[in-house]
Amino acid sequence: MRTTEEIQQALYARGLPLLSVSWLAKEVEHSTSPEKIEAAVLDRADFRDRSVVEHGSIRPESQATILSSPVSVALALERPVFLQIVVVIDISTACGQVTRPSGSERTLKLLLTDGEISLPAIEDAPVPGLETNLPPLTKVCLLKWLMLHGLLLLRPEYVLVVRPCTTSAQVQPSTSG
Image 1: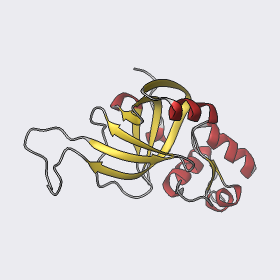
Image 2: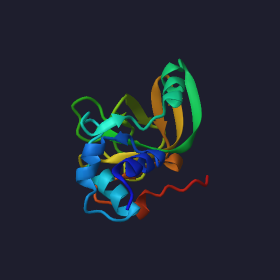
Image 3: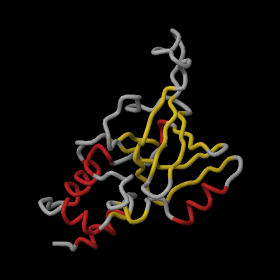
């Protein structure tokens, strides 16, 4: 059986934030396999809670590149990165309008966090599973960063929506494409 610290480091290596050992110990005490532990963490970890997250999932060297770029940056990641969705807004509807005009495509704007920093994001193309009424604690798994003027651009080929109560098989992103 692995120690809680070993589990913490293994999850961080998989792209999750560095989680508090005390929180992690309580949450995974009945989980036996790595897949069940990861699924439990994705279901229950609130990245906005500083008692849960010790350090965000975005590595410091990547943070510097992403946050300091004035215009645009494309960054291949050494591992997937999980971020929690804080809020989703459909900016394709006019202020006060409930639905968008017929035939128009949606454009979602999001605020994402890894527990340490918050990033605004916008759909560059519709991402399957991304919608305005997502359940709390929904995460996204990113395979690549594309920042433009301070916004993280979300494209379906490198973003996977991870809803609470998913199985670990659903959070295995494809690296092809």
